[in-house]
Image 1 (cartoon, protein in one colour):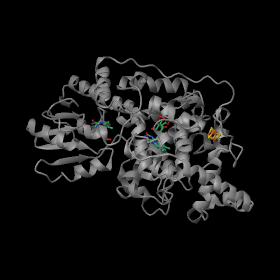
Image 2 (cartoon, rainbow, N blue to C red):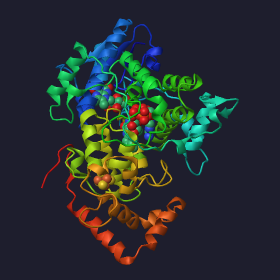
Image 3 (cartoon, protein in one colour):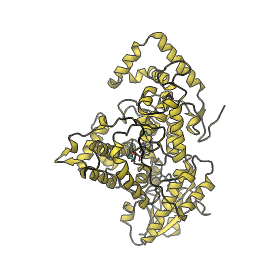
Image 4 (cartoon, helix red, strand yellow):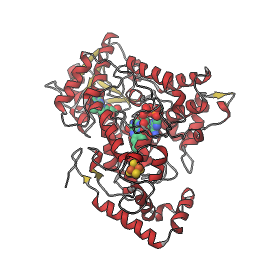
Length: 516
Ligand code: FAD
Ligand code: DLZ
Ligand code: SF4
């Protein structure tokens, strides 16, 4: 048999199973297609990243001796869908089957499954670039009443031996979260990310993005993401040398002046396959063993990758396609218009969206507690919010974006990602950031012209969803506070929130805010 090996834009790893098992006569295909580039209005950095990294990877495979067909967005015969293009190429090269590693989205997985019995059959292989497979996750989940990250994570620590000594967690605890909640104080110097140089091949990919998608968010002039494995290793090394030690304590902090703080910026490189999660976790563990980084930092970092990243993927593959339709709090609002242009006087939101526009990046706490929290409190419908997160972040692939947005942020999965909604008032943002000093609102006021909108929205949200949330043991305390509030104060808060929501401009089209 002669297979066509389709390598997707987020499968740029030489260890990919289909490449490892390639027979000598195989033809490898990488395809830039309009369908993938336009099903949401991807940030131009994300488009630039995918196209540049795919082109470099194709070049590298050719150097290694593979026969590679690269479909360029500008090719006249490109049929612009992944399925169509792979089948066209298989015919062109006289292949009798198409092999592909499990894609990163249900949409494509289903389309490929449906072609397994076609005349030119598709063969799907399990992606073994993760610590766990969807089957491992199902087995772990079986028979459990509730799924919780913490237990899944401990099992993965034991399975991999990461940060383990004699079957016990190193440092004597599984979790050092309580050490990881410091805000930024004083004038801290933040590490500057390495500045990558982009040669002709990358520039050509950027030019294609500018020509085909001129209106998309972001300016490629400021692009600074790794598009090759070599560049990704530079970023990894920089993180280990300059950020990891402080990663833990400032993990939840938000800063007016720093886009990246002590975060690794490695999610995109991991998600498209330039780095493996195993090598990243082992490298971080080694810094602890060499006494160059404290346990709370290293454990906190490894938990994100070995814990959360694997957990969300397991949840995605075991719950789809139903997961995407969940909306347990019944949200109906369209996306607020300023998510596309940062035109808002709420300073924390303005900065989070500006940073997103600049780099296709905002760190986890901005995504969760600023843009996420606001959408939760306003009741933005899951499909609108999920499309936004999928479009604007450099690292956005549906398997990881969806559980984080629909589950963690909107609590729309009824609590599989988090035992309670991550709702918070302006007080939380004020505690964790220096934004409020620059804002026209005050985080200490709940009603009145200067009151931070997060405050009234917070109580309004709790009132609105009392039926679903009041019985949650983790929400008892907060409902207690709400119930002790004087009735006239409660009604003033309700009015304040309602007035704000009535005036909130929303956007119905992708990336097209409509201003009234
Ligand atoms: P660091 O803070 O340095 O963390 C290290 C690594 O841990 C990350 O590179 C990432 O691989 C992993 N990680 C951390 N948190 C999570 C998490 N919650 N779920 C899965 N992996 C995690 N991450 C994506 O990779 N793609 C997405 O599309 C995405 N969408 C998100 C949407 C929302 C609403 C939220 C709240 C979070 C989302 N995340 C997503 C998770 C997280 O915010 C990003 O992984 C992180 O901000 C990337 O920056 P970093 O590499 O500097 O991460
Ligand atoms: C996100 C993206 C973009 C912008 N372009 C392509 C592309 O042209 N070709 C491709 O193979 N993949 C692309 N991707 C990623 C896909 O949308 C999808 O997430 C993955 O292929 C799933 O594994
Ligand atoms: Fe954000 Fe409210 Fe603080 Fe303004 S006052 S920055 S809106 S939390």
